[in-house]
Structures are given as structure tokens and as C-alpha cells.
Length: 426
Image 1 (tube, rainbow, N blue to C red):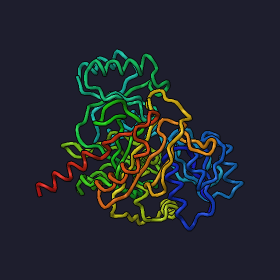
Image 2: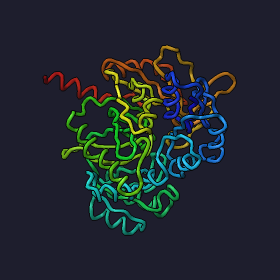
Image 3: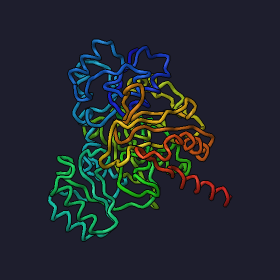
Image 4: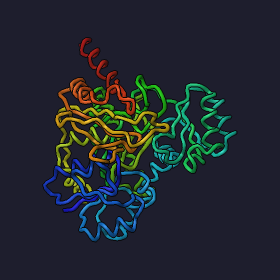
């Protein structure tokens, strides 16, 4: 069959790489794709928001499966457009994607169905929000209600920082329409992890857990980004916590969406935190996580086309996972997540330098150049996390001492240290 992947980032490149492994695939199209994808897919010069164009392209090119990567076209109804045209598509409808599009909606859903999450209140008035912040104290979390490219969350260490965040979002329109309303919630302490699942209505098929690193700089310092690196699985997560996350969070949320008349089909992403009271929800996304996808899919032993088709047909795909660990580190443009320059040449990478997932690159004058904030991810698999990370940081050597790029040097390191300490105790 012919497969169409909608999107242009690292998540979509990872999907293209996985689809390319399938014997069931004849041609892979990416719309619009990126320079890295163009090596294994036919990139189509078409925006993710050009719904009529994408539907017409899929019909004219006999596309047997379309997978929508990014959140914006999902929330704007691209899946609905494909369904109305009777074209096979994998992703949530506009109504179901609201679980990511509105943090207030997601919180209301969790409160109604008693799904564990942080205490919260929602505000559209800055004075009311600031009064609540003063009452609760710090640390406290301030979130833009809508989509803000992974940057609409402030974990405030002080009351003044939280008051400023509320003012920036509500009064100063920091994130435009996305911050016309904000959610102010209790700070949760613990180890964060991500759990993605293939979902069709109340049928839930969970993947292995992954851990993303959101802060820009080493030691979890600096502003939040779209993600600076990840690894999977999270070996420090015990079986009972994983089972709780599946049985008491992901499955009940899928059932709740059916109950609410918003049945979810696609990838349901739960951003979770392991607290002293057990796992609780930080956020939900309505699609594959980025960069978690880049380290989870390389460990999936099934044919991804078959998995998606099984899920769409209401069948258990029988997910099988490698025993290895996969780690990936993001190379970002200097200045990210703030202003940065584009068009900077990338150093050459050797074929044996792990796997490379392009996110913000272009091909100019016979070489790759940067075209985004997160430029690419370099990853490796290993027998354990320490080996996967050592291989990955070896692969990152061409980017050392580069003024135009930076990467975190401590992805997964605390988890490796924890595992070593645990082994010493045993």
C-alpha cells in the first residue's frame, strides 16, 4: 500500500523510518516532510493545514493509510476531513483531540471520572488567578489552556514568578489565543515519564514507557522546550506503577472519551509523574510524543503498518518489544527555545554513528543546514541505558564545540546513577 505521513518534524521522520521497514509498503509520502525524510519518502510541498489538498492527494495517489503527526491539524479536523472522504486515516477527530487542545477540558474530564491528577483551578481573569496563586503559595504550576508548542507551562518556584506567568499569559497574550484561559495547578513532586498507547474507542494497547527531558540545559535548568532528549523503556518504573498507569489512567480515560461522545482513535499520550501516592497525570496529548517516538519506535518489533491496521480493525496488534534500551539526544540551534539563526551547516555524520532523526533541517548546496530550533536527534540502542547513552554521546562528537548548536550532556544520567546505586545496594 501507499502510506502518507502528515508533518515535518522528528516524530514524523521516525514514523517514516518505521514504515520503511514494512514489506506492506510500496511508497511513502510525507507532507510536507523535511530534508531527512526525503531520502526514504517522497516529500510533497503541501502544508499540514491544506485539508482539501491532502484529501485530494491521498485519493489521487491511492493512499491506503494516512497518519497525522502534529497536533494542530488534528485539532483543526484533518481526520474528520479524511473520514468524510471515506479515506483510511489514523488519528483522533477534532472532538477527541480536545483532550490535548484544552488543558481545562482534560482536567474537567479527569475530575469527573476520578482519574488521578493535580488539584487545579482555571482562570480567564488575571486578578482571580493571582489571588488563587497567593492563597496556594509556591511551588505552583501555571499552564496556558491551549497549544503553545510545548512552551506554555511555567513551573514557578516562587509566588512572584507564578504571578508574572499569569500576567504574561492572560494580560500580555504571551501565547495568543492559547492563553486566553489558564490552568493553575498543584506542583507534583516525583519522577516524570510518558506512556503512549494505540487506542480505538475503549480498546487500549499500551507501549513501553519513555522519559523525556524538557528543560533546555543540563541539570534540568533553563526554559521548557519541546524536548531535548529521551530514553525508553523507563527501567526504574516498577511493574505495579506501570500497571496502575495503564489500568487506572489510560484505559479509564479512553472509556471516558467514549462516554462523553468523543471516542478517541489514534495515539493517546499520557504525561505522568510517579508521586508518593502513585502515578498521576500531568497532561494528555492526542498524538505520538516528540522526542519519545524517536526512542520507542526503534524498539517495536512489529510491522507498524500492521499494528495500525489491526487497531483500526478492532484487533489486538500483539505488540512485541526488544529487550534493549534506546536513548536519543536532541541537537538544537544556539538560542533555542528563544530566537535562533537558520541556515547553519551541519557537520557530516558517519553511517555508523547510530540513527539520525531529522527535525529542523534543509538540503542546500549539497549539504544539510539547520531550519528549526530542534535540528535533529541522534540515538542508539544498547543492552542497558548506560551503553545506549555512551554510544549516543560518542555519536554526538561532531557537534561538540560548535557555536551554532548545543545539546544536553546529561540526558538519562540521573537514571543511570540511580540504577548503579540500586545495584550496589543489592
